[in-house]
Amino acid sequence: MQISERIMQLSPSATLAMSQKSAELKSAGIDVINMSVGEPDFNTPDHIKEAAKRAIDENFSRYTPVPGYMSLRKAISRKLKEENGLEFAPEQVVVGNGAKQELCNVVLATVNPGDEVIIPVPAWVSYVEMVKLAGGKVVTVHAGVEQNFKITPAQLEAAITPRTRLIMFNSPSNPTGAVYSREELKALAEVLGKHEQVLVLADEIYEHINFLGTELTSIASFPEVADRTVIINGVSKAYAMTGWRIGYMAGPLAVTKAVTKLQGQYTSGASSIAQKAAEAAYEGSQDCVREMCKAFLRRRDLIVKLAAEVPGWGINCPDGAFYLFPKVEKLLGKHTPDGQEIKTSGDYVMYLLNEAHVATVDGDAFCAPGYIRLSYALSDEEITSALGRIREATARLK
Image (cartoon, rainbow, N blue to C red):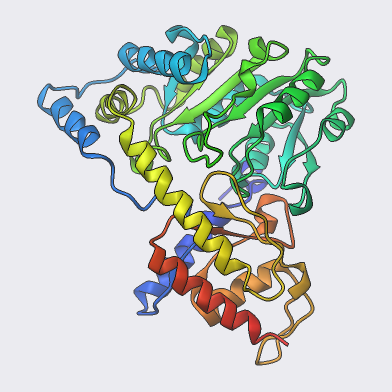
């Protein structure tokens, strides 16, 4: 059976693979704490669920417009104006089956084979694979824990060539929780302003999980790049709606039209019921968002405190999202109690799974070998138990 080369070149999702391994161990009766999955542990707020129930009763059960219901696109347009100070007409918004689809749509709609795409790393696992799917060339720009996982203007300038078509930018970041300040974004926008061929793809899905005490600044707010920035966002993280699968892109009309054409050929419009639920999320009270963010901040403080007690870890204090990304290079070369050498961060991740029964993700999946990712979208009790297990298992390395 022939499988296409484009699929053979793709790597499976490391986060989903580790989550599957965790589930398999749990089904075998092992008490595994899963810190590998990027999913809020809260339930979808009641007013959003009620809107979905009404949509069913009101027979929103037919095919939806390819770019989404106009009522939802208008709600997103208002949200961008009121919360972010950004002017995107409803016609510049496309709703899809999660932010992941809209990210891939934009890459496929704008990148030709051989085009260069800049990805600051560590970066979410799917960015590189999306560029591969489009036939583009990935150009990574590295920023480690020593610089709080944020690239500098000089690094960005050095990475841009005449072949650069796109930069995939994520703040707050998965996997690091890094959040760029307004001043840092302005400096990057000034660099990009000198290179008019570069489109900015700004993934802001963790926008509302941000601990700086201010509204997130979008890179699209700077005039140097305002007319060539595509915003990616959705309801999964802020409203605990991962399973509803609603995300959106907002950007230049030419990109919007291209994405609509592409989406019309392989998925069409997103779920009618989920769209009406998302509309309620954007138009209803935002108290639920603020309460969830408070819980994540408390958990962030807890995991940072406990992680500081794990021998050999190098950590920082993330400003957003719900991940910790410790550097574990000091543990490489050590041996497990049964004599196995920890040669890579992947070996350490498997040691923690088998010895401590805690599922994490190898940093290599995020283009950052020598690190691991932990999600703290868990209860305080689970975080405390997991870090205790990790500390004890790591202390047994020799």
